[in-house]
Image (tube, rainbow, N blue to C red; front, side, top):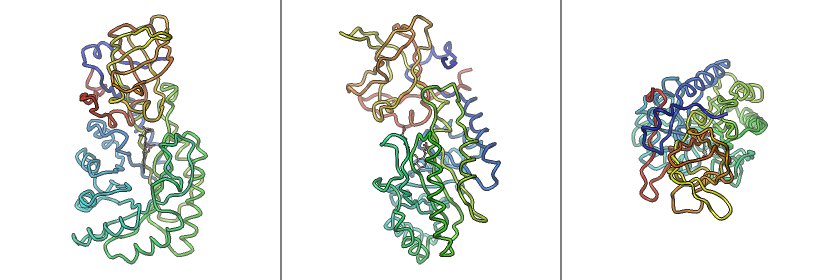
Length: 386
Ligand code: LLP
């Protein structure tokens, strides 16, 4: 089954562009809020890195979610979209001084700290402003996730977080510093996770760490379990809204929270992934020696996931119902990796046909580049095209 698109409006627009179905986005947000609010102490943040289009951020902010940022630029984008600073968390393995200062100036909810030298710099910069920075430690739980090697983050070999063995020393240090307040523990094991047992493994590891801390009379204000819930790239229409009920229930069932503790989530892909498609036009159909190519006007500069992670995006010819033929769907960039899909069955393509690359709402538009001096793709909301 293909997606439904306002093709009559599309034909007037310059391609390539991103198209966001705001009805689906709003339904997804409503589902998140409904399912999370079953548990009084759950707080959901949106991982801005997945898509920072200001119009999308505006809709997400209206729904009441907080913002998870990984750079000063993302903090600015979130504040500009109206996210309250007290709902902004800031993570990142290499925070620059100006980025830390921006967080301090705005009194953000929390810095997720990834190393001792970073903790010292935050303390110094906070002292210079006579402030106390709220900090959580990102702990590397050494829990693997069944996902692509480039997007697993919670293994000891990854650059992220503080090793579990160093946790006590770092907490001791934070408690001795005057201008930081240690308030939480942060974790994130990877992205596009569909095997729920990975989240159970994370819960078990957090329980062990918390038991250890409780013996030392330390109960933090909050636990942040990051994001990572995956989406169905193969069948974008089958369950367009991910199973948030199951996801939150897993944490409720397996994670032991202590009185007064809140549980924070940082979801990106599961929020915006399915509402976005990259729309492109067929420029040429070229017969090769052994196969045929559909050459489209979008390239890896517009959607880099297939080239970078060998990621699959469902491709549909939304202009045609003609008999299917098999194509390699490729872009115009001077790189052999500029391929969206090989041996893809599409309704027979002609020059000018519109092609949709589905499930591109997350890590699509935001990862676009200007390589080959190409223009960045525009993003349109379905509301704007009525
Ligand atoms: N929290 C932290 C600390 C993260 O590093 C990430 C994603 C998230 C939350 C949000 O994860 P999500 O819910 O979206 O899985 N560009 C890659 C994905 C990189 C994810 C990086 N971190 C892709 O296109 O698949």
